[in-house]
Image (cartoon, rainbow over the protein chains, first blue to last red):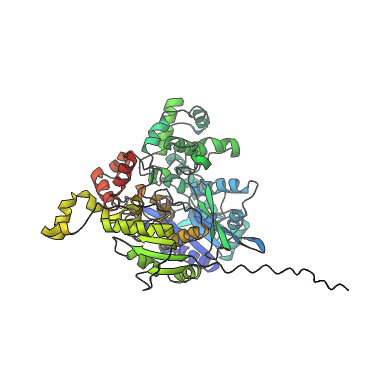
Length: 344
Length: 268
């Protein structure tokens, strides 16, 4: 597909035109170096330079709370009606770590039985990526898992070339949009400038933990009984922040709520967390992961071990959110380094 | 021609519309703000009134009821002998008892009384004739009688009131969430209070309020009580944000002093 050009001073017009076609969401500053994807209608509301948002864009693919079913039951019988709620939305400014997160979730929810709520919503989301040419902060580990470069999973992808963006068009929807807006095609000089920016980037982004990614599966295969988990478990508050902010965590809970008529009701899906004590608790009060250390270990294995067997890729995108949000200073890069030191 | 009457099947009598449950509201030591929360439910209140018969509710109606209650709502904590006796009598007449509001569920701010010698605090409040005024260490409702449902919060949170009422009407147990408030706060994408340099009790307080206070720019004061298995080692949190452990404990005592009664009960 083609590469197009958008001059920086034209971003506002771009956003305004786009927001006439559909809802546009983008990273917005919330103060104290916190950002969140929120609705915008002009370029000035957008933080183009941002560290990963509090919640990743997965919240648009699988909302925090989502009605999935309406039902009614009375003497005449039981009726149910599945519900899928979605809205045509463009997500602007998605970093490559979050694009990687979305492709992980796409694989999970495309597995049979397919998750129609997720997949229907995905069809109504238009994704505009935004390249990082330098690190957001010291907590990122995107180069470790090779999520620092664009690897598909978007409609359009913006790379900063100083006074303009070069836009990689990845889908027909994207092509129609840039053509419709009359954005010029990139010239040879633009492509050369992109090459130069990528070459400079290669000098900036390096494996952040000093352990090769290909060694991680071997390390994790020996790490089930590691002492590292005890240290991590002793600190953990079990607040669930690390999983809520993770771009690849997708565990959820379902609850049925009945109305005051005691006949009609609805089923709601809510994000859940393997860090909660209740998560692995079953009837009879048996708990398969009673200790915080077991729950934290589980989280790391769900990122660096289990998905390799199932999907042949890491489910960590190196965004660094879990480290930034942890109140107890549990640090992903440090944990991996400690595990490597113990089991390499 | 058959004349014998066919036994006519009398249509099963339509079951009489089940009498609506008789519900009463009572208050003990409290600000009555939780009653106000119920009257503030708006349209939801009309729906509730369609499902139950409110027979006593001091803040909203003047009628009294002299028979048994299907459901009683108890607001406030128990702070003298008279209150204790009155609560026991209500319990004896009630099929289901719901404690609502922090004063009732965890003792709430009234529990601060328990931080002092009883006579000392009585003298400070009532003056030299303090012995004329009965007073006992503050207790939460479940520390006096059996409680079937808890609606935590100061004040109670509207959506949870409704959820508990629906559970009670169906006779199902309601499980109070046992995750920290952070779990809900993060989903609301609030900037963490600690990031703002302010100590907040969210990491140790039971969720279920949808991080109501933090959504509105306030800290969590711990009004829903402590999670059942709080993190023992808070030193990392305390060191990351340069806090003093006493600060957290003092903040917690504002609502949760009566928790000590539960511990001493267990010891018995």
